[in-house]
Image (cartoon, rainbow, N blue to C red; front, side):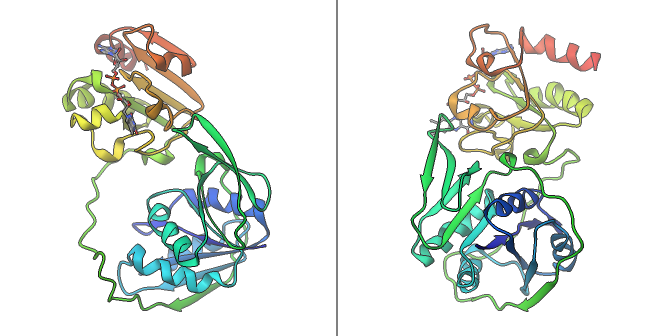
Length: 309
Ligand SMILES: Cc1cc2nc3c(=O)[nH]c(=O)nc-3n(C[C@H](O)[C@H](O)[C@H](O)COP(=O)(O)OP(=O)(O)OC[C@H]3O[C@@H](n4cnc5c(N)ncnc54)[C@H](O)[C@@H]3O)c2cc1C
């Protein structure tokens, strides 16, 4: 079985989720080529070539930022040589892989958490409340995997890198690249952090996040997450939202502060290693999913906890 792994990069760095996608690819077969597309990618391609399991790196050199509309046909051109096109679930794959699947006229199977065989997979559905076992009958499969469900692959002696110049079709009318606005943060990236401190509506304001959550997160070198209610209220930025319509995280330690534990929130964090919940309501649903439950007023408990760390 031949696999084309679509690698993701950002600001000159290989996304860590790619390492997890390689592990998933290795469960499907040993012939794995990785493709990476963009401008000035030599260093990223070199790192990609050292991921254990990669046979060859295809580096598509583009003049500038490439859009998903432009990348999808390029992947379809390559797809003829492969049985599986696979990437880690994330912003890029959510945008590109459905286009690839549509152009190939096959189904896309997203967010896989287990690979049972070459054609049978397990994926969460209904906000993670049900695990569906799905079988693909397509000759060519387009898959994304949830990175936390697969270990990161190790390293190897560098595989060969093939560089191909790629002239993106500039006539694509659907979207154009304007700019990337990247909030600066010294904290770990939310999806890769070992510790996540998340706040809910009960924080009451953006200042609540600043004065209560940030000092605790700094002590733990944690990323900051938020419930959708906190994001909707403007207490935290969109990219901090954890859950069904936000990001899915599985850190070693997840601290939920003033979060009720709605199913849509649980869908984004229930695979975390240890869950600590702080809530004033002893019947809050989050406590049913917590390893450590602290019933109390977050405005007194959190500063005390931070001071003791
Ligand atoms: C289609 C859909 C998708 C959704 N996607 C998401 C998603 O991705 N992520 C997400 O989070 N939600 C999502 N939601 C919303 C979700 O249903 C909940 O409304 C939301 O998670 C609630 O956020 P919360 O827990 O912060 O607020 P609340 O439900 O209002 O809970 C606040 C909690 O704080 C506690 N509290 C209050 N005061 C204090 C205090 N002083 N000290 C300690 N605890 C206190 C309360 O007891 C309560 O448990 C989605 C909903 C829908 C319909």
